[in-house]
Image 1: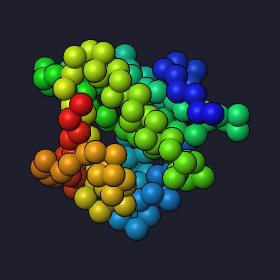
Image 2 (image 1 turned 135 degrees about the horizontal axis):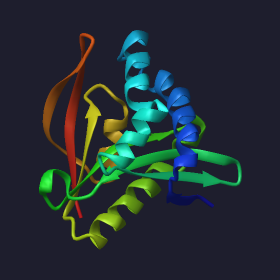
Image 3 (image 1 turned 90 degrees about the vertical axis):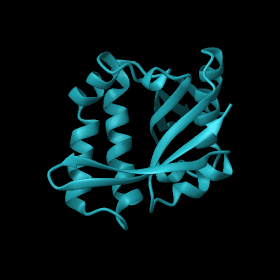
Image 4 (image 1 turned 180 degrees about the vertical axis):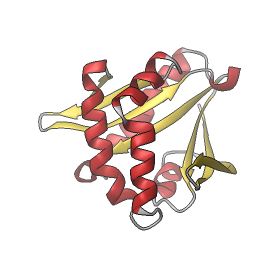
Length: 165
């Protein structure tokens, strides 16, 4: 059985490890190795993760079962002052994919959003990421797209997806 809990600072190395195991497999067909490494350092160094929690108000959830940690998600309630919850990150170890863990994480974020009177979930996903189909399957719809300059000559080319609660 999968257990989902709020990540503590002691979990940050585990989140970093999962990201480093997951990203190269997830993005090798759509991003250069240089961009993957740049983004991992930018978003998943321990100081960056700490800042996301302490300064940006992101909450991380971590999923585990008897075999260990499986994946994580992070979210922010009332994104941009609106009654919407933004899922900033959601990644699962490759061996955990297709077993309902991602849907369980999204459902838990949705429950928290409803408890806080938020009306929908938002997320960004690379336009070429196979996960787009998963998000559609669990109720998200593409509502826009954006290109985000993240520095060092790199661009995130994302769909904006939303799921009404």
